[in-house]
Image (tube, rainbow, N blue to C red; front, side):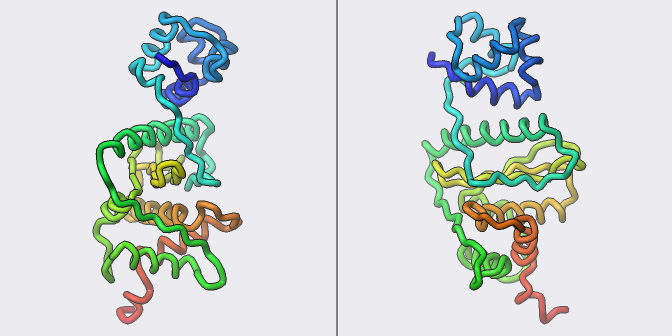
Amino acid sequence: MEFNGNMVKVARESRRLTQAELSEKLDISQVLVSKIEANLYPLTEKLVSNIAEKLSYPISFFENNVLSIDMGTKLHRKRLALTKKDENYIDSLVSIYTLCISKLLNFVDIEINIPEIQIDENNSASDIAYEIRNVWGIPKGILPNLIGYMEKNGIFVFDIDLPIAHFDAVSTYNNALNIGIIVINKNQPADRYRFTLAHELGHLVMHRNSFSSDKEAEANNFASAFLMPEKDIYDQL
């Protein structure tokens, strides 16, 4: 097999382990774990088997390549209580989900339609939200199946279980696959869950290459207009 040390880091962080904690499980030094993750240490079959066993992944998992999750800025809708370990855990899940999707895309054809529209003097966040509704063929009024529209157009949504005080969601756009991924905390009220999804959609559409210093407010404005367009409800208020 061709062992990829980068996948050890992904597997370790998905199990919420530090390098020191993994080194203790493997009965080797932390320095050696660091070298393994950097592909700087030749591995024996016994050590590979031990790594797979202690991290609870099949050996074949470590043959994969970590796909790039670069979207310029990776955007967590997080709160101050999110620890570095939690952030690494979430990022490792994004890598694993991206890897799984890349394999699935070899067997299915989907129509990916995630426009990139930046805010400028002609386009506000609300204007862009209306445009996405038009491009995706969403009828006026209430939007009953937000995830359905997202997945139909190439944005994959994954629920995870974290304390609500720590984390809402993260979105990333994979440039190699041209897909969007949203990892969202399922432990939030339904109305906040929907707003968070629309907020992350705003990031994926508006902020893939944006240098705006006000991304969070822009994504909130997008989400509000996307879920409840002023044009549709004005006459009812």
